[in-house]
Image (cartoon, rainbow, N blue to C red; front, side, top):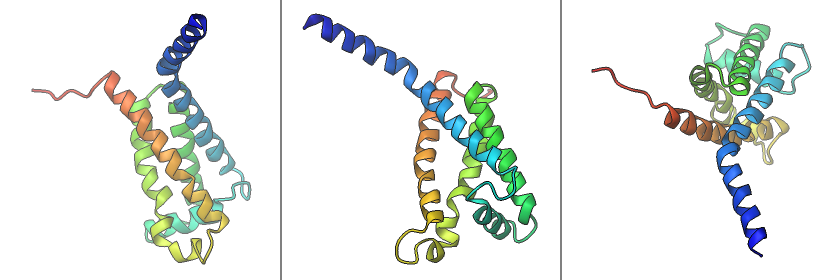
Length: 152
């Protein structure tokens, strides 16, 4: 029984030390994968929604393929910073900004996304709530390990 408790405690200690880094890398792989898909026309199931959302948010300044390419670049950058841990604060800042665009279809196109039951696009956007929560956990650890300091 003591051996089982000992192993359980060792596992809990290991999880406590590694789980946020595992979350960071897995979230990075998700963003990297979604971003890479957007470089190939028609490969991303969110392509039309991205075009429509960015077009609306930028009042038509950025539209069509340029909107998808901009999103692809941002998502790949976020993914690379999360996977490698390099420029993590910058990547988290970009992630925070991109979450505005990622979640905005819920406000901009609510009736289209939920005509009764959630559409596939609505489900795609809703899963981003989990990605946002994961980003908050990663940001909390990143900022607590090396807190920002105010210059006097």
